[in-house]
Length: 254
Image (tube, rainbow, N blue to C red; front, side, top):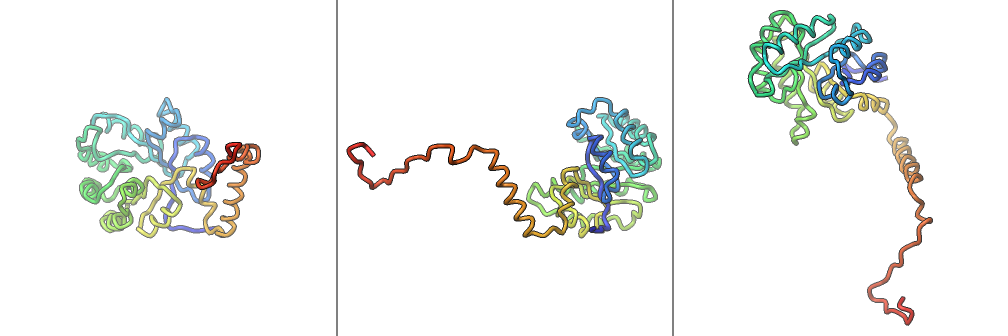
């Protein structure tokens, strides 16, 4: 069994997955977001959240605000935080129109609301939000490392610099978000992140950690063979006639 200093949060809105992963030895918490809930067909946000919190009474769970305007975002954040003591409220730096939510974040942090500042992409964004946070309060700072990597940039140097910026925030936790592969777990740990989020399908792949590569290769070949069996056999089709370009036709035309 591998041991990690970094914490792993499952990123999902599928209740059955949450119930299963609640017992997973590597999973320390959960996050979700509106996109995941839409894909899961969630129609009642609060009802879903309360079912999750009933299933996960101790491990931290992050739920995102859904409102568009700053006053409603603040009211929703306070409501979400009241659902359970292990709840963190996910909030972005701006609303959908690009208007700053930093004053809202500052008021919520000063009120002791556990926050998860999400969709961070740059060190400048992190530098803008840190002065608005109460250093005595718990906060998660979610950097979308996977999406940064999707642009061809290496997120590891940025995450290392981000961790250094948290020196005066002892209750702040740096989170590697939007993971793409199992190796991101090792990258996030080496960068000094406190948390990494992974979808259930990626968590399932943790069973491959340390696996013998020769065995893995043989299993891969076997899987190709099994998949090929589901296709029509080559011998069941007539083989095409291959004509050499320099070969003269016979009287029969062949």
